Image 1 (cartoon, rainbow, N blue to C red):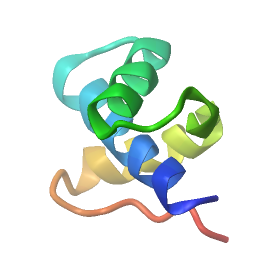
Image 2 (image 1 turned 120 degrees about the vertical axis):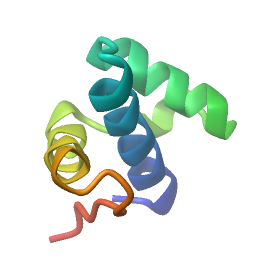
Image 3 (image 1 turned 135 degrees about the horizontal axis):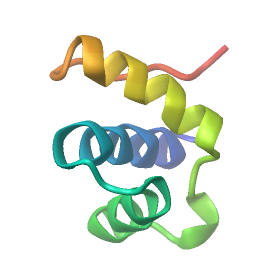
Image 4 (image 1 turned 60 degrees about the horizontal axis):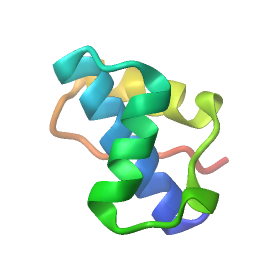
Length: 66
């Protein structure tokens, strides 16, 4: 996953956990806030990985790299 896609996933996860946003809306808002193209949107599995990390440790950065 590219760095920008990972940043979007992490930002979307924070929006989902902290604000209860819908996944699609969170990914789109995160991309917009980061100035990223829609083509860089992560898949739900990538956001899911970050959501689990964010829920356990809100200030940590998720790592979806295998």
